[in-house]
Length: 96
Image 1 (tube, rainbow, N blue to C red):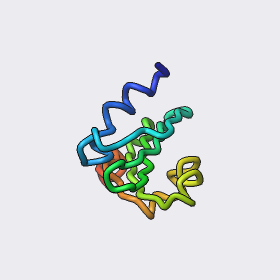
Image 2: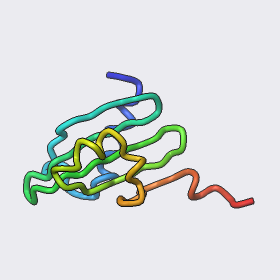
Image 3: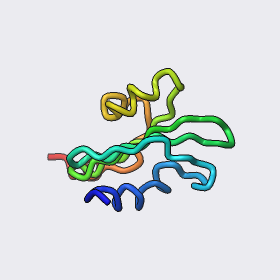
Image 4: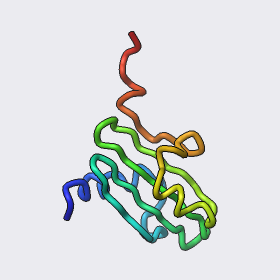
């Protein structure tokens, strides 16, 4: 397993906030400190892109339409404003 694979799997339940049995992992990629996955909810038919950046601690959950899923999967942090930031080390840092 690549170095980031275990941290990706540990965070999946936090990303989805649902019963994991309902989700199918359609695609997963690891690039540098970033782990990204595209999930399909087989009950509701929804698509969700989840991403984690080990450097910043930022986790994203972005619900996507099928025609945008590939683009959001390739560039999840470019679409961060359209999703939910689940956790971020930067958000908890004191402001100076």
